[in-house]
Length: 116
Length: 118
Image 1 (cartoon, helix red, strand yellow):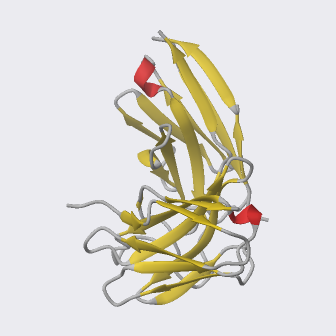
Image 2: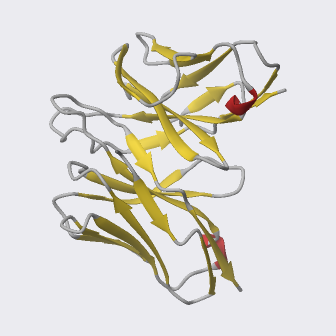
Image 3: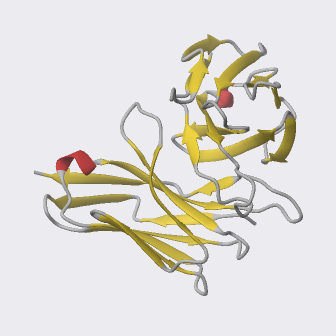
């Protein structure tokens, strides 16, 4: 079935260290992989995404990598800051055969705590 | 541009009642998706509407339904509420431009409606 596994569920790092969150998806037809950051009591916000025709994408302190063969994708945050503390969700888009869809399957989230 | 808005922000209902939630997408966005967020199950896809038609549906019972209007605003309805329906209901809108491969459209979330069923 459609499934996205995300690890770890919690991650505590010191300010300035790097953080890595990993996800695995099940549907090989997935073609779009966004990452969302959700601060307490707020809406999920897109922070970076990657499409299936690209292996890596960087945006300032964030980078995502995609391994389509292994069906793995990861988020790397460098030089972490206290304001990076939040829940991070990975997601995979599930195309509908023969049609368009914006269905996203989400991972279970990673609570990142950056200690000052 | 104004972001995605949802009303009401908070709702308290009792078991057996029904509820209607509203979502106004970003101007120009034609796709609206709905998600249920709970601590135990995370974010789960309910359904997606595009041009007033349901384009995809998740694994929720028929008590959950929705519709989209010609101005792209969307509503979702939950009938015969159960305690387990207590959750944050999020909608997300997408531009869905022609030419972009299916499923590769950025989704922007609203603030959510917090539903509590007593």
